[in-house]
Image (tube, rainbow, N blue to C red; front, side, top):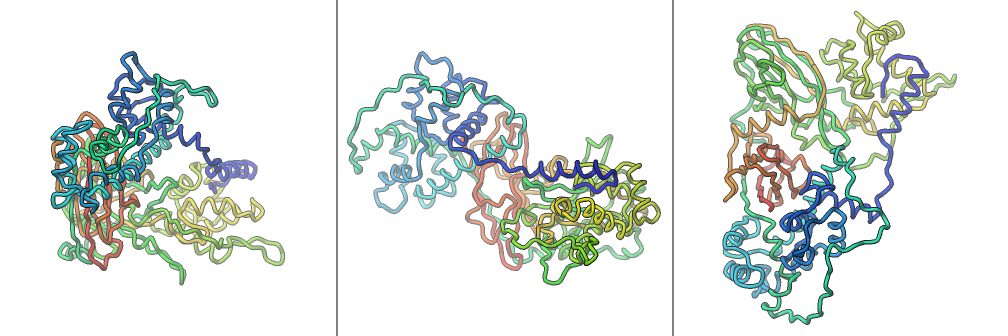
Length: 629
């Protein structure tokens, strides 16, 4: 919603368009559409475009694996004959129709025939013999990689029940990750995926001989090993995971008290500046926030803190944002804004305050707020009762309700970044950009000053209230645009602040007066992602994937949270499977105990942030990272 003063006609027409378009509902996809979407997702994991052709057996094998299939060499040869030069996307779709994905029940049945003790496990000696001596053989190195998988092996035994669960979950998460990538990447969404026309007759890429029926005895291991589809399920499944590494961190209640944040002596004599801001949770789960430039005129000791902003709380209403973790990364600007050097971040904590004390030289610094996203996240619980925003008295005049006024007052408190009780044009435009995507220009601001209460050319709290009342009157009491504003600012239908976390930054300098200015509002990625990765690589514990020295998992733990970063030094992208199921009293920013991430070549990425679910209890972080083929 935009509440910039302008002509009623323009104002209303633009509002109507904006309030409808962002929330247009889509029709549910048909099974056919879901099938082709999954085909595209698998294909684009291997190729840059679905217009590219499969030109080798290896590419076909890899694409089928990403589609959740377990092709044996016999299956590959069925579709890639000596006469085959290439297969296109349509051919790939036809193959997927014929080769159904392996179910968990089929995998369990396959493994169970090797389970001589019927205890859910296979001895490593038996597993080694079966996988290297018979059927479609695996190499010694491949079998060792399976035996070294930490989460499915123990005491000389391979737990195939855990493995089947791990394998099926990995397939689902890899597909989900790729589908999410397709949805976000507008360029990929604009691709012409193959030349398939709905309803066109299928054509087989190669003749498929009808298999002759066979009778198999369940207890005959030799027959089991020679049965192509079942054997390939086991073989391909075990080849999914090349190697793994695990981390365990045990944290006591309320963290380690030895690193508690303390104020410097005589801080009351230091010069002080303050600015407010806010984390906002987007529809896709991404978090955006204000970012700042700070100027230090001369070398000085500096004390920096960030904490959630304590708004006027209505009795009986929850204040979930007060438990959100906050942090501040300080980066030094050198020759340009693009060349930023990480200096430090607010690691120490005292209750809800996170801070840092140290010496800074003269210059320009960027302050980038951060939150892990463990506690600022989408709420599943629906709100049934919608708050009333406006009402009419007996004369028909429109008024704002007391509850809505209180909420607007809190919003005013959040967007009044310098805390002087007034809104400058610059502060108001942060609000406008958040709620409508537009800015209010100087002419419109002049109209605003003429029609609403201002002081020193800045909008007062009462003027802000009247501006919203004008909005309601323009819509003849229809609150739809007011709700657009409220949702944009993180409020639900009950006027609870559930998808935003306002914060306040305090800067104290011993020898000069610091300056701070909010410069823009953007996603907590980019420079922040680089800063977090650099901090974790510098200060965290590192473990190399066994046999893959170019893939390193870095884990950093402080009193409040644990962050893991995956570094891929190789020239190829890798997919890492993450399993947090054995962690206790933990919550992560992804909301999943098991998931997979893709790490590009020569890159690092933040894998996950983890925090205690209940800070008053001990929490144990136990995570297994597995490299997927």
